Image 1 (tube, rainbow, N blue to C red):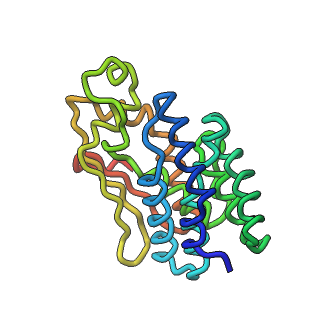
Image 2 (tube, rainbow, N blue to C red):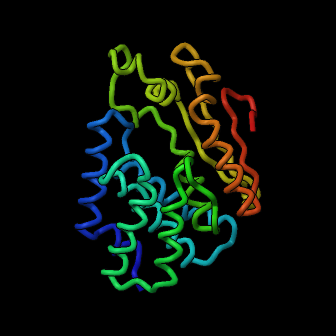
Length: 222
């Protein structure tokens, strides 16, 4: 049985994660390297654990979270679909059971908000873990630089001073709590960029029979 440790230590996978992040850096996107995918893998596992899913389902979500962004090595456009195809080739090479490959591939192929849908619990957990990773440290440029001033995505991410994702003890809800410096960007700018992601999170939470809550500067907005 292929484990998360096998995936995390595979040199080919690590190379693709590193190179995919380099592609995104070259076109000005936020960090999508090991910090991001490690966090997404851990959060996806915790979400399914909170809902009482099996340890193997939790591990499949962990694996999907770790490799979900490798398609960025091909192109940012349709990276979820490219990543799903790449994941199929890798997992098949490593001898994973076809039923489990199908779960991971469909989760990866359904994680980008442009085409995503929580088709099953692993996909739902991946969506929630991925879309709640909002961090100032993911911004590559510095405040005051011309590129920063022009890019609303950078301003919105940099404006987030604190971000915390928590699960209710009974697993009934997931809360994304943000503290935003409104001198860098107003809360409305956050919604302009992330509204579709937050609505997708609500769909994903519904799939897991949970409630998705969003709190910004102490005010609950979703």
